[in-house]
Image 1 (tube, rainbow, N blue to C red):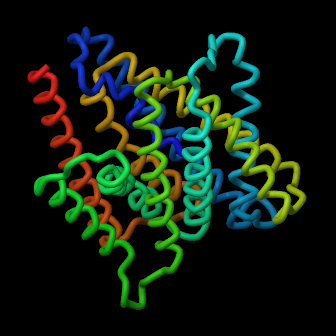
Image 2 (cartoon, one colour; image 1 turned 120 degrees about the vertical axis):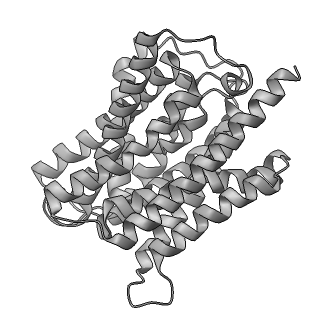
Image 3 (tube, rainbow, N blue to C red; image 1 turned 180 degrees about the horizontal axis):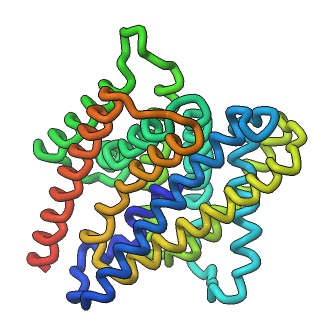
Length: 316
């Protein structure tokens, strides 16, 4: 899972404008989103500590993603009595496809985070809305005009600046981060279809259940006994992800998506701060330039989507 998939938690809220929120609600929406972003960046930080040997023998990304899904599912099971879950009308095949791509995307993201600056890996992962837009053409039958293609082109230029193909600074691991964005883009496309008929909490629960099965099975083949500290970090990884998703959903409930979602890009700030404090990684000028261009393109795309949603709402 990716968590990025929950950017479109409720498609209906995009089509039908929410009633004007009171100032305290808007403030809560912003604070919830900032908290969510802090936790999202925290998951990549924990994955980096587990995968680069900082907490003991370096664990394989598949084993790290197993910790994320298994412990997240355990946390959700504990909370299940209060979640009011129902499973009537569940589209299990689509959930399976969504969870498969989400698990692969998360594993790739964790692999990249362990081997490159967190801010760079996070910035590249922000390309997933671009891939979602492109994939929506064949999978959802959507039409994409020149404005949205221009937004995609801007973000891809930013990614090329970060990846630096053909130069001595090129890192193959950056392509893994790019693959993570692509897989997450497929996941978001699946979520868009699921949110038409299914509540967000059911999607979250089923995703973590399927993800725990997939990730746990794959981890068996690369298993390395974790140290006591690594067990703590693996458990924390799952719990932090659930908290991130919970705060995100609360943000969507407290404020209009068009207001709250832009705060999602603060994840990049938290990732860079964590990397600097714990691993003494200072973003380079190239990193800042590439990340800024990626975000510019994605924000451009988000503004265009907002305009299209309003126009559809006005047309009834």
